[in-house]
Length: 201
Image 1: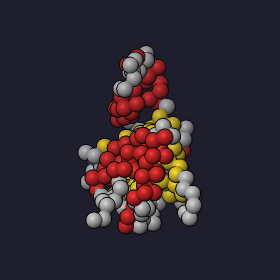
Image 2 (image 1 turned 30 degrees about the horizontal axis):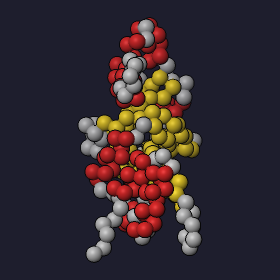
Image 3 (image 1 turned 180 degrees about the vertical axis):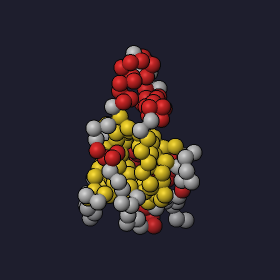
Image 4 (image 1 turned 45 degrees about the vertical axis):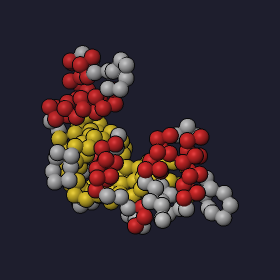
C-alpha cells in the first residue's frame, strides 16, 4: 500500500482500527486465481503474535475449501466524502488497512458457536432488546451452525493508512471538520480532528 509519511499511523492506532472492524473483504490467492468474500469479522488480540481476525462463511461457499498459495489478505476501509473548492481538487478522506496472514479453517461446531456468540454480542449488546443466540430454539441454532464454517486470519503484518487531510493547511482541516459536522457526521469530524498534525509555532 502506498502510504506517505503524513498518512501513516502507529501500532496502537492500528490495533484500535482493527478492533473496530465489523466486516471486510477476505481475499485468498489460490492456484485457480483470487477469490474474495465479504464477511463479518472480529479482531482477537490474544491469538498469535499479532492477533487474528475471526469470522465465518457459508458452508456452500467454496472459499473455505480453497488452498491458499500464499498469505491471504483482509481489506477493511472507511470512507467519507470531502469536497473542496477553489485551487484544489475534490478528494476523499478515508482509513484503510491491508491485513495479511495465514488463513485457518475451523470446521468445528464449538469453535463456530463461540464466534457466532461473540459476533452477536458485539452487534446486539447496544440494543434495548438485544437478541441472544439462546433466544432461538436449540435445534434451529444447531442447524444454522452446521451451515457455516469458521475462518481465522492469523495476522502476520498490517499496512494501515489514515488519509484525513493531515497534509492540508489548518484552515482546510477546519473546513473539513465543520463540513462533516454540518452533514451530521460528528464521529468522522472527530476522527479528522484527532489526527490533525500539531500546529507549527
